[in-house]
Amino acid sequence: MLPLALAAVVFTPLRASAAEVTVESTSVSPSRISSGEEAIQTVALAEPAPAGGVTVDLLDGNEYEDLTYWQSTKHRVTVPAGQRRVSFPIRVQSATSAGTVTRLTAGVGGSVAETSVTVDPIDARVQDVTDFTVDKRIAPEGSEITGTVRIKSPAPVGGLAVDLRKTPYESAAVSFPYYVVVPAGSTSATFAIESAAYDRPRFATVMAALSTARQFNGVIGVPKKFSIGVLGPVRHYPGNVENFGVVGLGDIWHPFGARINLTSDTPGVIAQLNVPTDGSIPASQAGAQFQIHVADSVPVGTKVKLTATWVLGPAPVSTEFTVQE
Image 1 (cartoon, rainbow, N blue to C red):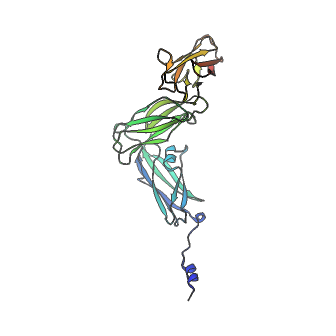
Image 2 (image 1 turned 180 degrees about the vertical axis):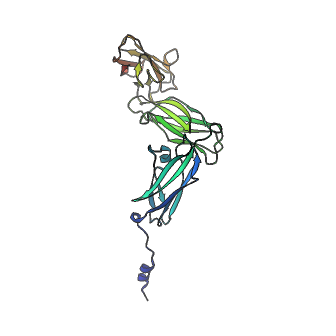
Image 3 (image 1 turned 120 degrees about the vertical axis):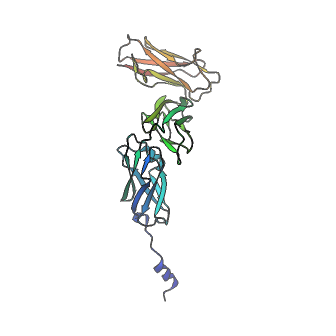
């Protein structure tokens, strides 16, 4: 008869180490969804996960990264110790054409399994993004703007994800999640837009999208200090997103408003604040936009210095821009 200690060694089942674990398969259910709907992805291992569990890397195979999928998974999931599989909810970005295929992979070490989910647009006659608003347009660094999206019909079971993107993509004006979920039975949802402009005023266009339905809003982040910035090209005959800038008051207290004077060092260039007739930025606002008017007599290529002077406030601040064709 074997000693008890030896018997325990003989009959204890061997467990794979984390380095030996491989992915057997991954799947999505349902495998075909409408834009904004939730699906369940399952990852199965070839053997039970060892102590501490196993982290599985999740990626999408799109030409450009699916930011909605990243937000919902953070590109990883853990299979608990002793388990072979794990299931979790996912979202993928909206489709603008029928039968759009998003390929998904799950990997551990050198082992990889693939699956896909097919996404169809939502019929705009039934569902749509009808509105996207923000509670304020300008916010100092570290503070928040509240965005609200509204859809045409109540969201289905599981809720409906509306994609959120900014242009330019790399803008450091603000940050926010890549999608917001309208809860089941509801027609609206809110999300936080955090100002990230630490050094100078910055601008971004935020888009709320569901299939081909898109709504836009412009937001501006400003530093915590008194600042001025020109936020687009300046031309003699501007378009919709040109010849404008912002004066930021940051988080400086101004309970009675802030009177700002704008001056240019170039004759023929005038900057005008978009504020009430008394020229003051209200106490409730962290700044104000201004328009730039360039006379035909000012040559293309002229460098212009704009200065904002806060009456009875901090020292003046300046910025420069070049008149473009």
